[in-house]
Image (cartoon, rainbow over all chains, first blue to last red; front, side, top):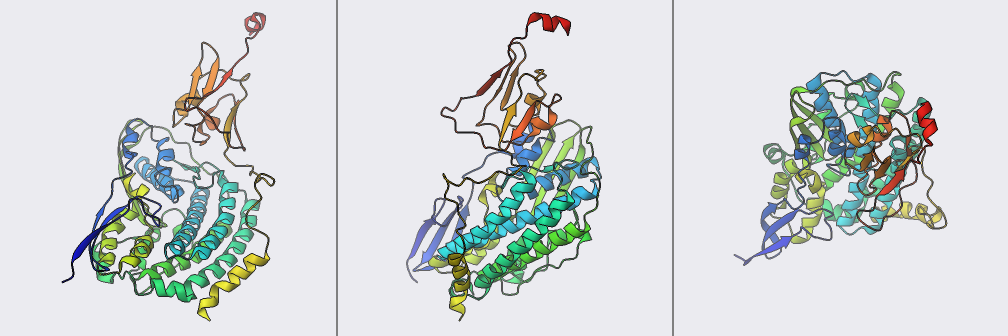
Length: 359
Length: 123
């Protein structure tokens, strides 16, 4: 048996934008055991519900994560609306869906860039982010913020997009989609991408289910599960299929995200066609009393917001289970038996968002 | 050849205009909706303090006695909750981002001018 060495990986590491720490136990160049540790950027956001009133908590929920901010806000709103039994107007649900899908597209493009950067394909990284910038312009035009949308609120949305703008956005999105197709064809077919990702970090179907993987990590392992099929917001009113890949390696996880891009574009087009006219919010009065679990699909996987209220303006308990937290156990499984040089690629392939995880 | 797949993307990028701007000379235009910074029409303000109450980051301080309204630009998260809450509509969200502050406790202060006493008596 070769001599074992322990190599610390992170929390500060060139490929990791966020602090996760892994102790890699190596035999020569091969990883035999991984001990993850998190807790470097705990901010105690959930505790803030005791001093902030429930409508203000939306802003805090949105700031749990910088990339999937809108979906966090949306999920929190869904949870409070569930407690208070509020019927959100149809138009608000469609607008939420449009913004949620926009945030999914920009998150996936960001991830594709970071992933390319992870295996040293700088040029592809730049091109991904160039395309993403175009989408961020649309986001800023419609919401006012580039990454913190700030449009979700309990009882609806805060801003409306008029139908004329929606139709113009559709044209612009078609243009972005065209650029995405060129970009993803590189991820799908390029030899250097395939060599770094194919057969690396395999997560078998049984393991993915047993360890509770979520999101693209789960779908790449041939499990057909997407929280959007629960039919929240307007997802039950549009026609879409779950993207599934069979191999469960880094390449599959990349392809799942590439295909989800087009699915998101498709959902937005359908929403723009079907969006009804009407009010965008309902007036919310009173205080919530009760508890609720809200589940939505984030770019990284399924997020759960748990809200417990006791009849006052402040919530009694607010708890978030973020997708990256669920994906850390599968990540440890993937890393076992891989080469040291592949560790960054595998860690990035679950799209880790440690700020989300620690809140 | 699969290894040349990126060539198409690169060539298009080389032949098209740059995706970036020559910043100090070409500035990025703001959108109508861009949340930049809060501005106040202090003469219209009635110092009710609702904006201070609604602010999720405690950036606003309203002093009724001295007729002062102040905002900590570093604390402000530009959510425009105060703009929506203002009963007199004297707060507004401007498109330009707020400029840099030098000190951490540097706050923007706005003070209402003293009105002539006659005018107050008439009201």
